[in-house]
Amino acid sequence: MNEIEIILKSIKDFFTSSMLKIALVPLIVTMVILYMLFFAAADFGITSLQEIAAASQNGQEVVIDENAPFYFIWATYLIVFLFKYSFTSWIAGFLLYTIGTVIVLQASVILSIVVIGFLTPMILSILHKRYYSHLKLHGHGSLLSPLWVMVKSAFVMIVLFIVLIPIYFVPVLNIIAFALPLYYFFHKLLNFDVSSTILSKEEYKEIYAKEGNNFRLRTLFLYFISMIPFATLFTAVYYIIYLGHAYFIKLDELSKSDINNDYKKEEKKEDIKLISN
Image 1 (tube, helix red, strand yellow):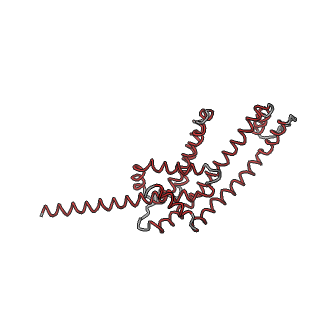
Image 2 (image 1 turned 45 degrees about the vertical axis):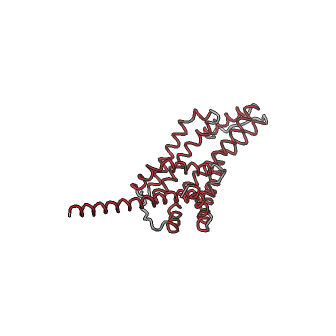
Image 3 (image 1 turned 60 degrees about the vertical axis):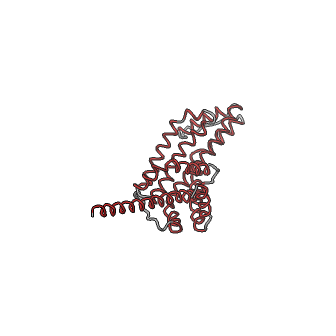
């Protein structure tokens, strides 16, 4: 089965009633969390900072509460300075809304991937019963393994964000520099969720050693889809289906290869017995 066939087959599976019902879970949970985060951010003073920005643009006097948190005072002085002049005001406004939009979009991607991780066994179980019931699943890892992978991947993502700061000021390259850490997190979580549910450690190492680049390209393709605003809220289940099919197919090939190798070994043993006799 070629890649186009896997993609089309995954789309067909995604639009089945059972998968569409599961797809509602990451949509609802992520929207609720983003809604709560929005009001939490508002409580931390974002609404006040927006009012200060508007007052600065209109030339009004800005009064700062001495009891306000230090980060709020610093942000206030910075906003007053930036919005005091028309040129810096335009740049600041553009960056504020652009960065804010990017953060919201990326937060929705990360939240959806984390939520879908809990549903991965259910999705892959449906695929297994429908197409691959002849295969034995040897999932690896413990209940804490996904949490460990998530924490480790998040740490590396943050480090990459810090290391790549100088590139953020270079046009075009800054887009790649900002996307790279997020793609790393995206790939690690998706790939682990699917592979650890289907394969044993030995099977995973054998398949990934040969097909690692192909699976990176697959998750990169899915990452591009996730860059469509809020697409991941609806398509996260498709990501699992698509990678699931890819791993199931490779497991099937590996199983057939092992059977052939065992058969050849048995033939050699029989030949040796005949020669010895």
